[in-house]
Length: 261
Image (tube, rainbow, N blue to C red):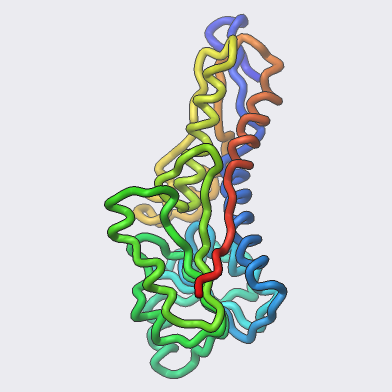
């Protein structure tokens, strides 16, 4: 806690950081996938899309797969991998390995979302299990028109659509960063309703610009390791309430895999 302009006003940072919210969201998605797989073991798993959830999902799958390959069009995202059991491929390496017959996954997870993997790429694989993330969080005409997640579910004996929604709240997409931003913003709005709160400031940045335009992994990690919200208020004992409101909004997020016949 710090004082504001005068000692009457206090400035409090949330204990919950941006990376805590990210972790909670990607853990929900990974757990939904693991639940759908029902403890099944695989020889080779391919996860498409390292950001923001793919790295975590790939890590979770290493316990049940002999080989886990994480594929992304951005080569520099290899730097975010912390599990040495995960093999990273950029698009060039993936296409070469595919042509050479080196890839025969029995599990494929597509987390690339809007504008991501084409159905044609998936059709070249023959997994026994295929999971594709549904990028929609609610009905939006333009997003709905561009979404081809169901079209990507064109292979596999067991097929599932990974859905992520928020109860009692609306997010335009199921993207992990969208959910992080909406969680923080809604928590700020909830906090402003409390007596004695002057303002609640979301400590958000354009993280995707850091990661994909600047291509600075270290800066991205540093930026998300900051308190999610800063509150100016009269009550110095408000810290627990700030974190409880953030946790309430994090708990609104629900992820599950819908079996597609």
